[in-house]
Length: 162
Image 1 (cartoon, rainbow, N blue to C red):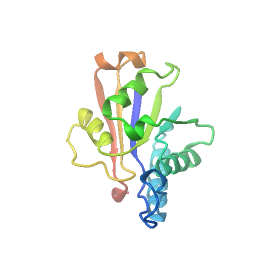
Image 2 (image 1 turned 45 degrees about the vertical axis):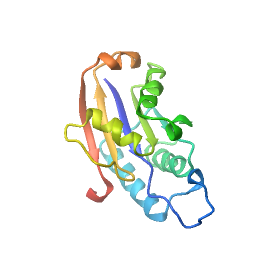
Image 3 (image 1 turned 120 degrees about the vertical axis):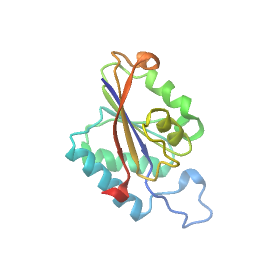
Image 4 (image 1 turned 30 degrees about the horizontal axis):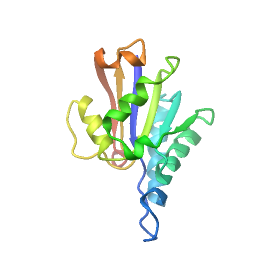
């Protein structure tokens, strides 16, 4: 099974009006909520082989928190397309993964993440909240087989539930 966990970046700061959208860091609340979700995932034995994140500061900080809690050996790959692209670009990233990778985390932004999640979520959502996490498992031997694979929802968690 190939597992994909979609994680929206943590709550970010609007404190300095001159920051560009890409420069906005996580708020303390965003760091705490992301850590709470990461600890929940760790308790469930969910550790990725790779974290792919947007290049926006808040997304990279979210990825680093996940890495710190789940395993410092987890590689992080930065992909600009997760900031500027759309939900189809997530598939493009997945199709290009090495087949040795079984579980990947994607850290990015709305509306793309919500749109992608709703393709596979049993009960549709209006908005994937900050630090919200959705996992889906694909019954596929290779990442390129995803378009033909059946899938199963594995997890959906919002930080306010923890």
